[in-house]
Image (cartoon, rainbow, N blue to C red; front, side, top):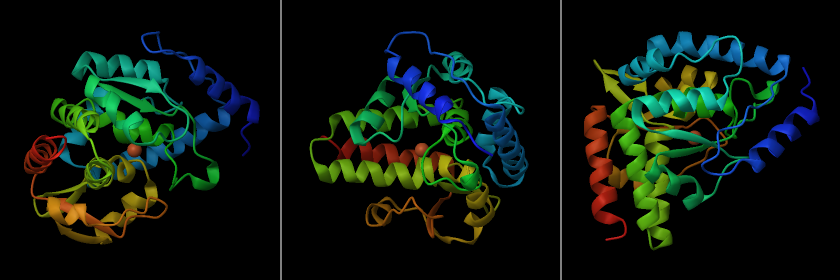
Length: 254
Ligand SMILES: [Fe+2]
């Protein structure tokens, strides 16, 4: 499968031309990219029924991502706005630090419209539209998760030191990217990087699963180029949220 460079560069041009406050543009996807989306999404959706946390499964029923084509960011953003007030904004590639987290305070998630290469269909080290929409956007339909994203954004805007910014990145990674919660004694995923990767979904239950402790997360290493060997399992989503928001509110920018 080949995806013409012209399709990618046209998406990049459209994304770069988009300005805050303007209606989101429509992005062009090739038929091969639609096929890749439908194949990966079908596999993930089946896996989510068994291994995604209850909040995610409930949110996915609300958002109803299309199965046969790459969704437009605009249609998903409209749905989120009506449910939790969150919106999507186009980004190209990954965005560093405050540029990524800061806008979340205002309910804006920067998301790339690009599609992973077919050679990385089961695990993509870089964010792509499957990661952004299947992973992040769906759970942003849940009001409490949306508030947690906002809390990270506010903390990023308050942070005054590299140490605080590193703590935010680690907490975000081990919760909203590779977070796992115990449900009836079984690990269930709520993190976007797991939920958007077939390989991660197949393997996360066999990772080194440790008790969720903020101080342990702050000392843990991140390597987003491989499936995560170490994950932190919260007793419940509400306890995870309480501990993370308490840390961000009291220990960042204070
Ligand atoms: Fe992400």
